[in-house]
Length: 369
Image 1 (cartoon, helix red, strand yellow):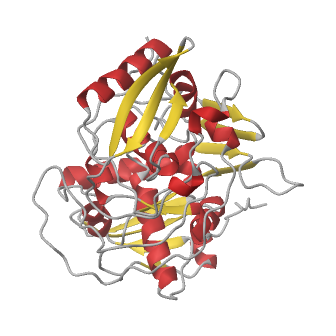
Image 2 (cartoon, rainbow, N blue to C red):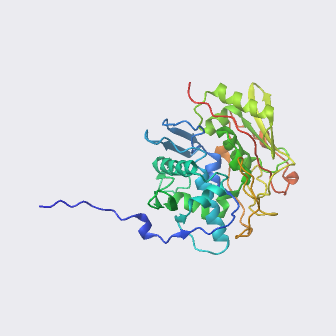
Image 3 (cartoon, rainbow, N blue to C red):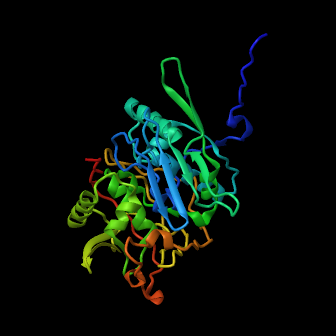
């Protein structure tokens, strides 16, 4: 009697491919990923899980020893994918979770070099994104309490006989894709984000973009709560020291950071600055409302390693009219009793200008001691 092996068909065979066109797309990030700990902040391999809970929101992230957890630099792949999907949707083009592209398109869009080493690093990022397992209660219906997925369901490369990569394909999870095509769950970010080198600074930019916006008083966080919110493996004292060092250097154009102390609490205030490198979406007020509308001319991706020359834009900016309405209770609470006055601001004083963004040299995430 011959044995038969059950061969599961590839998910790609059931999806129409979304072929990414050549051209610029304004970088966009998914809001859920900006305000909760989904990625490792260190470049060193991390296998310790992230377990985060705030209110009725729970996030669990698990890694396998072979690859380690997906890092905040690996998340550039997801930002790029979200950017391409939103631009295509704005033009009325059909998209899907199945993306087909050239590595050169992705690498240049996120400010990376395109040498052999960079192609190898990209494949390592895809491997970690596929191997990382996420369980979360975010955006689940009344009857479904937990959703489990990986950042990439499957991926494949097409290479020549000499090993030169010509094209790539990957399939995004439904949870992420739905969060991208829902415009209220997407925010435009500054292209200069990709030049940030430190894990904590990259994470801090996303927090600033999500919460501070262009509010005159910015946003105030308790440092102990920020530590929990980051998912960092650093000790609380080391994490607080890193924040103080960043605030002292002020390397973040677009936002000003200051340390405040009150009632035995250490707080970090994030204030919008006048200078910024590229226009992005509207302000986020203290209720979590952020108008998503494009202004000005899209920025050109900035690389920290080489000069970027202007490129023609295939997809023009398109207004995203739908506002972003979501309570930020679970994201803004502190480890001590909540103090609404910390982040109260006069609604009439909220600016309607485009918020600034952060760019600067990074500090390094500290590992466990």
